[in-house]
Image 1 (cartoon, rainbow, N blue to C red):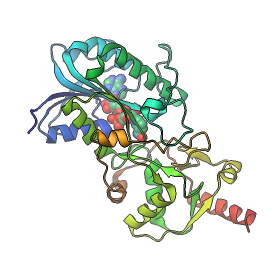
Image 2 (image 1 turned 30 degrees about the vertical axis):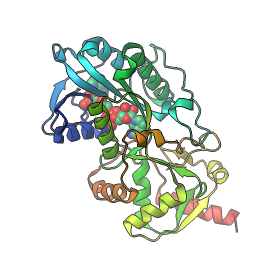
Image 3 (image 1 turned 180 degrees about the vertical axis):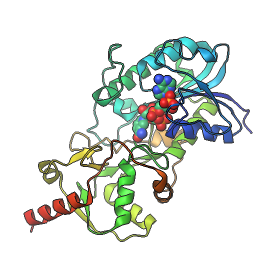
Image 4 (image 1 turned 45 degrees about the vertical axis):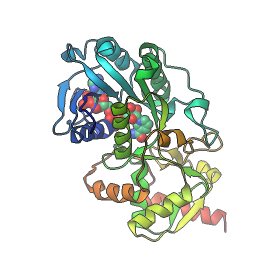
Length: 337
Ligand SMILES: NC(=O)c1ccc[n+]([C@@H]2O[C@H](COP(=O)([O-])OP(=O)(O)OC[C@H]3O[C@@H](n4cnc5c(N)ncnc54)[C@H](OP(=O)(O)O)[C@@H]3O)[C@@H](O)[C@H]2O)c1
């Protein structure tokens, strides 16, 4: 039995941070979450310390307290710098949730953190972690931590697509909903392209394990890749629906103005080739060896499907509308008689 930790979650009011805090409470740890409390609430049993990290002294309510570990989901480099300045020597182990968007080159399948170059970090003037600055901001967050925390006290987790109940984006569950509806389905690209994801609950379990065990290093936080054809087949099998896919090539979709990955009129989890050939095909053998355990896709599909009626509207919504899909399929068949 592990000794209980004093754990600080910087975040904790939504999705991943909330799941980490909930699992930590269930494991018997003393959990403090620091957030504004505007995105949601913290799980029962966790303490919320109201903090606005936009201000340099935003974490002052924690002054005098020390923690065995912190798990931080920050996006803005200034938030990380403020936390380091205010908490630095009162935290034992730092776990930072970074992103695969930190990588500069996504073209090669089978890469690991050790052999993938990073984007240049955002400058201090570029503190907004949205759009094209999201990846550079994550790099700047990582660098602020690496510059201040000894390597043996720091774990950087470059996370890929997080899915499952509570997801605030519908990239994964577009496909769950679409394949549940059945009928001829527009499948983007080709069946031997890749899909890669991590269930939020598995990622949270691993982050907690890392904090408990004081693991250090740089790892990808994502499960093993699966061929897109197998991915769709597994979703349909989990839902008990008939699969009827029409694979539509990238050139056609791009000519028709369909967007990749996410957002308006997009086909989620589809990425342009060749530049993103490695984006959803990372070699995660190191992460699995370091304790990441991933559940079967069928479990994630069924739990996401059960949760969806309570999910509400997500913004920005990804996917294509049913009538649009039908029109695209009609045009595709006409062009490929
Ligand atoms: N979703 C994905 O597929 C994906 C992929 C790769 C990486 N990631 C990374 O995974 C992490 C996801 O974290 P998450 O699910 O917990 O959600 P999140 O959307 O990153 O949540 C941000 C958290 O920080 C808090 N926060 C925001 N602004 C704040 C401020 N000014 N002061 C204090 N607290 C503030 C929010 O709480 P309040 O608003 O209540 O203050 C919330 O709890 C992020 O680091 C993200 O970059 C996500």
